[in-house]
Length: 506
Image (cartoon, rainbow, N blue to C red):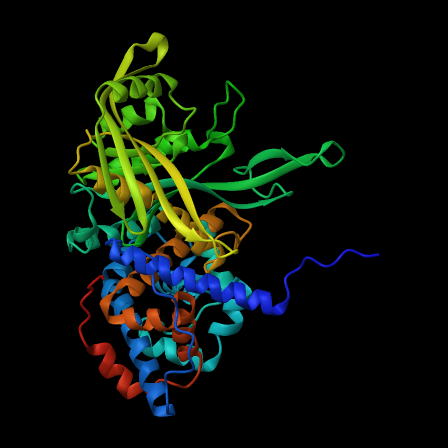
């Protein structure tokens, strides 16, 4: 005789779902009564088209395209003037397109989120798209082939292209666009590494390598790894800043070791200090960087830092923290969003490192223990807990611990979210676009620059409602489709494009 089925019936599943919703409403009401402020963003609307007529949709498309392009055109003169100074490696007798037009074409390729050079050729060269681009950007007299851009990026000096990106961020900083989001009057910069692509072919001598697979399928794999730096603000605004590519030849040849993330951090920090010599910076780093040389470098550059401290890292620091915390507890309980938090910290912990422990640093350690409730799939109230610890360059106190930890250190995840967006939400971070080292880096830099413009558009006051209505990818697709079809009236677009644009971030 078979056993009775233990799977819940349709009626039971429906009843359980209703009970879960009811319990969630009760829990949310309890949170509101206790003064908890929810921090989750509002979901995208699940509604039909907001446009009732063709004329209404056309007006909305013209408004969206004009605002997005006015943002680009606001920074375009300075950007093109810088790009124009880049030495052109092409034969003057064979040049058909200006260097600035080629680089603008490459930038728009990522602004509109084309997946490959082949798709760019197919889509952007259509008569309607070409006519629209010439209306929006009079600098484009004719559209090049994507392979023409590849040949330029293969031979160009990319330092000038990255300098144009840096100068764009400098103009935003001078314009005080980010002043509301600073941490202790510092600009929070998150640094982390990410794999760009991997394969079994050694198509460039700069590629890193590793052995993968089990014994019977073990083989050498070659990959590209990049150390990225991005401004990561607590409102979710993440601005790509610098990219440092790891190269096999830059490793330790005497120890027969290839390049690594810590060696790349030295190069990236030197470039960051050179490009922003007087900018007050707060570095947000993961547990890999919890070591003496990294923190000493930050002190030498007059940078603040918040570094993740794992349980097994720096045992001498943990030992002193536990001993001093038992003797002189410094704590702060508070609520943040839906979570109850309990901070405890110890200042001025002496950390010795280097040969024979001759070098010393004063570190400040803070631990955050938090708990919150959620409703599980069985409609039961479950209490979740988590624990976080950081190394701080500045002493902690009840007035700054929330700002440095919750608004600063915790938002190191912003750079991880940026990787997710660039890899899986339209920018094709893991696509090489060219199997040539210099050209691949050039496409990468153009992609990061385009991400800056799209991020600014998402957070600017003029386009906020569009991105809330359609989402990020939906808004970009809305603008791209508006350019690809005969939606835009040239006369009205010239009037809209002539209006001044003031960048106001929300």
